[in-house]
Image 1 (cartoon, one colour):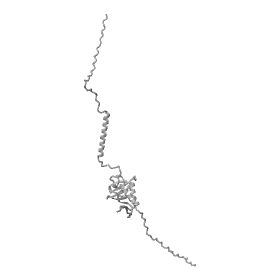
Image 2 (image 1 turned 180 degrees about the vertical axis):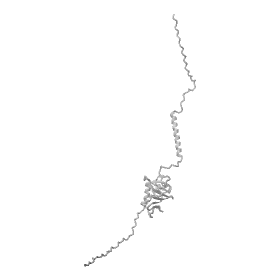
Image 3 (image 1 turned 120 degrees about the horizontal axis):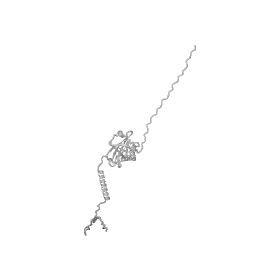
Image 4 (image 1 turned 90 degrees about the vertical axis):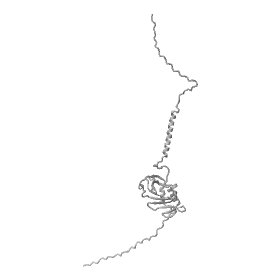
Length: 248
């Protein structure tokens, strides 16, 4: 009789039981996962905002610092600002060649011509010259340089102006700029500058056309005697008679 087959079964390892979750006691708070207070986008916005604030503070401090080397480039500046000097009360223009012209206000406040002769002045023309003095615009200021470079060692015109504020200034006018946009000038033998071409030309027209109220008529020349050429004297013609020839 056959023997019974015995089967050997391998014992499998016992499975570990999963840990049991403890149930919270009744009344105990349930723990929840904590979320970050600020999100990534919020943090980036805060950093950018802080950078902008720091930049604004830096720029404001830079504006408050004095800049000794900076020269103002914006706005319009004048050679003779009326708010500081007042209005012209006397104007004299002396060219390097030719006669000087001077107009001044008299005791009644009217303009009178004093040079090249004393007479009544055209009020409109004289007042226009005074307005040109007060509106001479500075195009550019020139640093320390040799005045002879700009023709100011021997200026073409010297303008002397008295103001109602009690001051007197001397304006020297030299050469025109290479671009012909202005004239080199110097005020009171000090600061050199470039003045607007139109303003200077309008002022210097006072020399070519003095503001006479009535154009003076030239005085007639004294009569001069016309020299009479001496009368021609006729020289008598000497008649030559042939000498008689003697016959042998």
